[in-house]
Amino acid sequence: MLNDSFRVRYNKLPIAIWMNSESAAKDPVSFAPLHHHSEFELIGIRSGKARILIDQVPYVVSSGDIILIPPYSIHQGEILPNESLSHFCFCFDLSILGDDSFSSLLKNGALDIERIIHHSCSDSDIIYKTASLIFEQCEQHHKGWEFIVRGQLIYLIGLLEARNSVFSIYTENTHHNFSSQVLTLLASMYTDPNLTSRKIAEKMGYSQSYFCRIFAKNFSVSLQYYLRQYRLCKARLLLAQNTLSVSQTAVSVGFTNFSYFSKQFHDMFGCTPKEFQKLQIQMNNFS
Image (cartoon, rainbow, N blue to C red):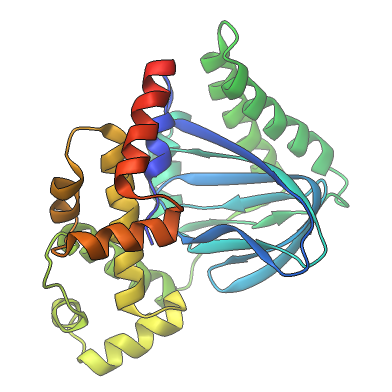
């Protein structure tokens, strides 16, 4: 599902940071539910071991590894059994690089990027240190941090280009095209409370049964499940902005049953919409 709730953490630059540490558990623990976004994401593994799924391809990562997730790639992550995990990440809009051509090619799939920079690679250390510096500058906000971050992001992309981690895609990517079409349609149709797979299939020129089959193959979940998560992420972003009431928010993202909306929101985020909104107000007042 679309997850753009981190945008409320933008400050001067279109970049948001996150860090987390989890203790070892007997069973796998999710640290990133299935989602996608239009921003470029980088995750740095400080310690521990995890498995991350990017566009249905699984990767096992460990301390010192860097994970690169291009725009619109569907991904999720889990900590492996009996393993702890400490990681940092940042998501940034490609406009920060000031290169519209590069941004457009990466977003439309004409360019792709290597997903994992393993710590065993000879040049991984400089890439990891650059990513860490970007995160620290965003976190600490020292004077001039925004210029350092912008420059280091451009430097980071340059390092990736130099090692051929950014490459052209010459063949048609059917999976990417289907996914991009679906995401574009969802962005314009998710507010419709009566939206169904039949409506989207008709827009794309498919039968409903064929569309549902291809959707499940590409997204690994049903449209109904994905649409619900998509709407909840949109609702979370609206609630964080504190411009609408809970009921207005529910209606604006396509829910008609408020108790169902509240329950689904709680199941996904661990608190009710009202509790989340109050917490955001307290955080804004504190800051």
